[in-house]
Length: 244
Image 1 (cartoon, rainbow, N blue to C red):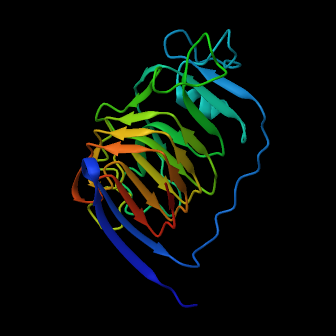
Image 2 (cartoon, rainbow, N blue to C red):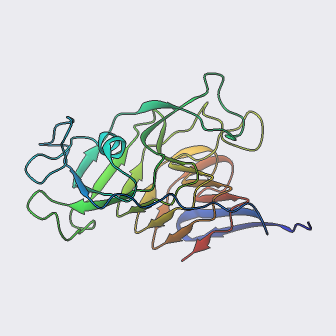
């Protein structure tokens, strides 16, 4: 089978840098079955992480707990506020140059097909407004903000991803380098829209890093991310992404 490789590097306004590399005719990533139909609500101020949380009257407290409880196909609606705190998860098969612990740390780890939307309030769980009611995930320099891993098709919308630092987490094709400060996507077909990704840092892909992940990125604002190498805003590695 013939392959074609294309490396693109360009700089956009506000320091957004794109380093893109993809493989035509690469492996297909099937979507996980959409089994769930429910809505899980999260509010960091009034919620409680307990079995059965997620209703309007009793929301969960953290996004990660809601993701862990969700069934594939369910939607997680996150109220305005700042969500911090990282946790470790094992790397998946195929993760490039993993740390010796084989663990990665992040605010939210997604390994199933769910939808996460920000911009809600506890008085309006129906219509999100992420501009007036921002939902911020802040890693506080303790790891990445978000990791999306596996052959899944999640949606991430209306969030502010900041404070990510991928030092020592690997995930980069080059030995000794780290990838994806704000968001790291591996082997997934994600839809990432309407997010603000800023003030994250790593070696490659300060804002976002996609590894073999043919995803759709639309309406995102990516700025003020820093790298030691390339792709200040976005780095695509064998990821035939749709950008808009």
